[in-house]
Length: 189
Length: 240
Image 1 (cartoon, helix red, strand yellow):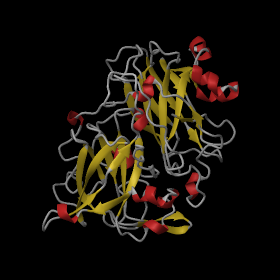
Image 2: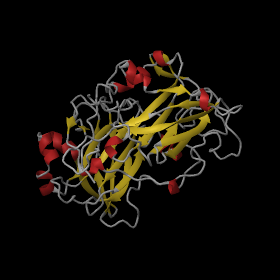
Image 3: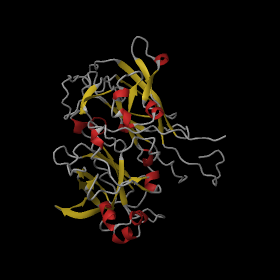
Image 4: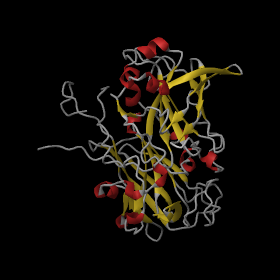
């Protein structure tokens, strides 16, 4: 007898009103207004405090202002479970922004430190999955099997967040392109 | 703990990324194929949510907008189980839902549909599955509403639902519909799911036996998240 696994429930778009259920105060609801899901690592978490910010553009170069992103990462020592966060792109500027700590390398794996990012929005029938690696981890990135699998350095560059400084804060800039020139690498994992 | 991978996602069972009849998909999806990767330790772990993070009324959308009065509409309970592909319950799964009100209007700063807001309805809920993977919400049945696509297309009544399993690789956001709704067959978004059996998985079934007599109708919606492959070299003859 062959045992077949059940079929997974199919995905559907999160739609333009995704904020109501995921970030209700962004939708304008007067509930859960103290929730700060964009702060992934609590204030007392060990490690270097960082921000990750950027925009999302579509195949016409337009800003995607109605997306929700989720971040998932190891902690600063490379331990799991680590930190989860959620942020929306701003309705006007298109910017998303996370506050977290820089993840550490996970012992026993060849992977360079990275954060996982999932994208949900109108027009995405199933979420997109990408990763941000850190520009200041040159040696680890050079040895990373995923960045090697991407191959073309121009494509691998779409997965690297640039380290910048803003008023004494460390900000990694990570712009995402859904389609066309400079299209970000997305994964099936 | 085993580091066994989860089954690969069947991308032909899920909707295709670009489905031109749902116009918003055309410019928002990559042209290059997705890059297949092995599942890393990060993908096999996931955030853990607890009851302490939830409000006692989070699962009751008739009351949880906090005005003290009840939302208007057809009173329903939606319940079901979250299983993995190996038919094992997923306990402690965070489920989040959002929906339009009985008139098809969302409480969202960017929804301009002319139907009225209900002062007593927010449309946002969440719940954790119990030890058997079971969950239940009390809400009102959302109304259908038009959206700009091929002129004025109509969305069938639906509730958006987001689920976290034990691993981040099980993450899923979808929508469910209601048995018997003639708009399902006409909806460009519902029909991004090409396989009829797959679309049927998104249709909540009327569960008359479990109605609340003289109070509410009940619908059943079960959810299947990705499951783990078996390994044969661990001391676990029953599987894992």
